[in-house]
Image 1: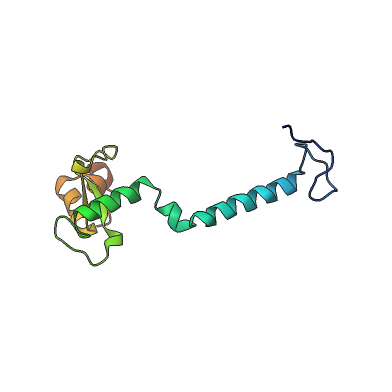
Image 2: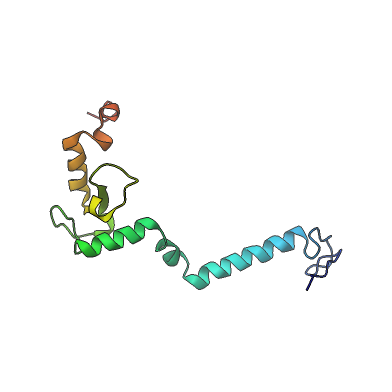
Length: 128
Protein backbone atom coordinates (compact mmCIF):
# COMPACT_ATOMS: atom_id res chain seq x y z
CA UNK A 1 0.00 0.00 0.00
CA UNK A 2 1.54 3.26 -1.06
CA UNK A 3 1.27 6.46 0.89
CA UNK A 4 -0.75 9.25 -0.68
CA UNK A 5 1.45 12.26 -1.41
CA UNK A 6 0.04 15.72 -0.97
CA UNK A 7 1.23 19.20 -1.85
CA UNK A 8 -0.08 20.81 1.34
CA UNK A 9 0.84 19.63 4.85
CA UNK A 10 -1.86 17.37 6.33
CA UNK A 11 -1.37 18.94 9.80
CA UNK A 12 -1.18 22.70 9.32
CA UNK A 13 -2.76 23.04 5.81
CA UNK A 14 -0.55 26.00 4.96
CA UNK A 15 3.01 25.02 4.12
CA UNK A 16 4.21 22.96 1.23
CA UNK A 17 4.84 19.34 2.06
CA UNK A 18 8.38 18.59 0.90
CA UNK A 19 8.33 14.85 1.65
CA UNK A 20 4.84 14.41 0.27
CA UNK A 21 2.86 14.57 3.51
CA UNK A 22 4.20 16.97 6.18
CA UNK A 23 5.95 20.32 6.06
CA UNK A 24 9.36 20.59 7.69
CA UNK A 25 8.18 22.12 10.99
CA UNK A 26 5.26 19.68 11.47
CA UNK A 27 7.52 16.72 10.64
CA UNK A 28 10.08 17.92 13.24
CA UNK A 29 7.40 18.36 15.91
CA UNK A 30 5.91 14.91 15.34
CA UNK A 31 9.32 13.21 15.38
CA UNK A 32 10.30 15.07 18.57
CA UNK A 33 7.11 14.10 20.36
CA UNK A 34 7.40 10.47 19.18
CA UNK A 35 10.93 10.05 20.52
CA UNK A 36 10.16 11.98 23.73
CA UNK A 37 7.15 9.72 24.45
CA UNK A 38 9.11 6.57 23.64
CA UNK A 39 11.93 7.68 25.98
CA UNK A 40 9.55 8.24 28.92
CA UNK A 41 7.54 5.06 28.25
CA UNK A 42 10.70 3.02 28.64
CA UNK A 43 11.52 4.68 31.97
CA UNK A 44 13.45 7.80 31.03
CA UNK A 45 16.93 8.41 32.39
CA UNK A 46 16.88 5.47 34.81
CA UNK A 47 16.25 3.03 31.96
CA UNK A 48 18.87 4.63 29.71
CA UNK A 49 21.46 4.62 32.49
CA UNK A 50 21.07 0.87 32.99
CA UNK A 51 21.82 0.08 29.33
CA UNK A 52 25.51 1.03 29.36
CA UNK A 53 28.30 -1.55 29.49
CA UNK A 54 29.83 0.18 32.49
CA UNK A 55 26.60 -0.07 34.49
CA UNK A 56 26.28 -3.79 33.75
CA UNK A 57 29.94 -4.41 34.66
CA UNK A 58 29.53 -2.40 37.85
CA UNK A 59 26.45 -4.46 38.82
CA UNK A 60 28.30 -7.73 38.28
CA UNK A 61 31.37 -6.55 40.19
CA UNK A 62 29.33 -5.18 43.10
CA UNK A 63 27.52 -8.51 43.41
CA UNK A 64 30.88 -10.27 43.48
CA UNK A 65 32.43 -7.93 46.05
CA UNK A 66 29.31 -7.59 48.25
CA UNK A 67 28.98 -3.85 47.48
CA UNK A 68 32.35 -2.79 48.87
CA UNK A 69 35.96 -2.17 47.93
CA UNK A 70 37.64 -5.47 47.11
CA UNK A 71 40.87 -4.27 48.70
CA UNK A 72 39.86 -2.69 52.01
CA UNK A 73 36.13 -3.47 52.25
CA UNK A 74 34.99 0.19 52.41
CA UNK A 75 31.28 0.35 51.54
CA UNK A 76 29.85 3.65 52.76
CA UNK A 77 28.99 5.01 49.28
CA UNK A 78 28.95 2.30 46.63
CA UNK A 79 28.23 4.89 43.91
CA UNK A 80 31.80 6.22 44.04
CA UNK A 81 33.55 2.85 43.83
CA UNK A 82 35.73 2.68 40.73
CA UNK A 83 36.46 -0.11 38.26
CA UNK A 84 40.18 -0.98 38.21
CA UNK A 85 41.85 -2.94 35.39
CA UNK A 86 44.55 -5.16 36.87
CA UNK A 87 46.56 -5.36 33.64
CA UNK A 88 46.07 -1.58 32.94
CA UNK A 89 44.42 -2.38 29.58
CA UNK A 90 41.09 -0.52 29.41
CA UNK A 91 39.96 -2.66 26.48
CA UNK A 92 40.24 -5.90 28.48
CA UNK A 93 36.93 -6.10 30.36
CA UNK A 94 37.24 -9.72 31.39
CA UNK A 95 35.79 -10.14 34.90
CA UNK A 96 39.03 -11.77 36.10
CA UNK A 97 40.88 -8.59 35.09
CA UNK A 98 38.55 -6.18 36.92
CA UNK A 99 38.16 -5.22 40.55
CA UNK A 100 35.95 -2.67 42.28
CA UNK A 101 38.01 -0.28 44.42
CA UNK A 102 37.37 2.78 46.53
CA UNK A 103 39.05 5.95 45.18
CA UNK A 104 41.78 5.79 47.84
CA UNK A 105 42.83 2.22 47.02
CA UNK A 106 42.56 2.89 43.30
CA UNK A 107 44.82 5.93 43.35
CA UNK A 108 47.21 4.12 45.71
CA UNK A 109 47.62 1.24 43.21
CA UNK A 110 48.49 3.69 40.45
CA UNK A 111 50.79 5.69 42.73
CA UNK A 112 52.84 2.60 43.67
CA UNK A 113 53.28 1.59 40.05
CA UNK A 114 53.68 5.07 38.56
CA UNK A 115 50.78 4.59 36.15
CA UNK A 116 47.67 6.63 35.36
CA UNK A 117 47.81 10.12 36.84
CA UNK A 118 51.25 9.32 38.29
CA UNK A 119 52.81 8.28 34.95
CA UNK A 120 56.15 10.06 34.43
CA UNK A 121 54.77 12.12 31.51
CA UNK A 122 51.86 13.43 33.60
CA UNK A 123 53.65 13.71 36.96
CA UNK A 124 55.33 16.99 36.01
CA UNK A 125 51.87 18.65 35.87
CA UNK A 126 50.85 17.60 39.38
CA UNK A 127 50.74 20.40 41.96
CA UNK A 128 53.47 20.23 44.56
